[in-house]
Length: 295
Image 1 (tube, rainbow, N blue to C red):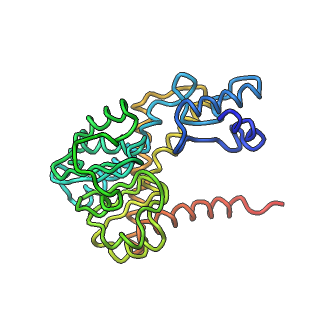
Image 2: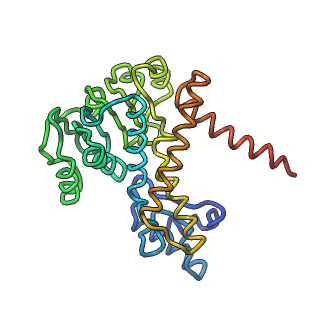
Image 3: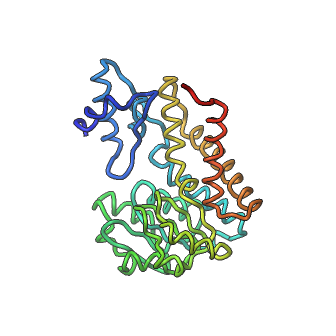
């Protein structure tokens, strides 16, 4: 990790490119990145990376931010569709930082019954419900879900097409394909991962827009990037926010973005993904037009 950061030093900087955590990294890796860059500069540069431990300039709530954002948007979608969470079920693919936080929040805060969870080693399905807290404790002790025994073992791809109200792919990309998009039995598809739906599958979901409410990844998993931005800002200011402040600011931004996406999709009769992308591109276009071309 340190060697990688050493090679990246010419290309990154607190006002150039800031590294953030993703699959295969954790707080320790981000701490090594920050320390390597700081040693090279000769002083501590906490704002060079995000996802650091709080003790060296990280922000409260960063690890949980993506999962919390996913759950907040699921709750907003359920409210819009007039769905009662206590009568709903959810399947979560992935049990890392995003999937585990999302599963725990859906079960313990929202009141949804989680009937399916999976990681890179196995998929567990139980129509009667899974004790997500027990699953979390199991992963903390064993490192994965392989030996977790609160349900039936099922093919990970088959789990995606089981009947549920909420399906949240929170792991790798391209898991919703043209082969299974037409078989999905969920009412809400919450894309917690980056690019979990292929373009071919997206065309099928467009045709099923009255059956499947899609929360696109550009919106659904934005919580992590938003709080990474908060961490960068706190680093520049050398001033820390409480977890309550961080979460409140996160939810306010997600609420505004969700409302924009839904409003535009209805007005122009386009998909939620197209609406989210159009909104983002339009912002960049307006800024570029205002700045002009130079030289």
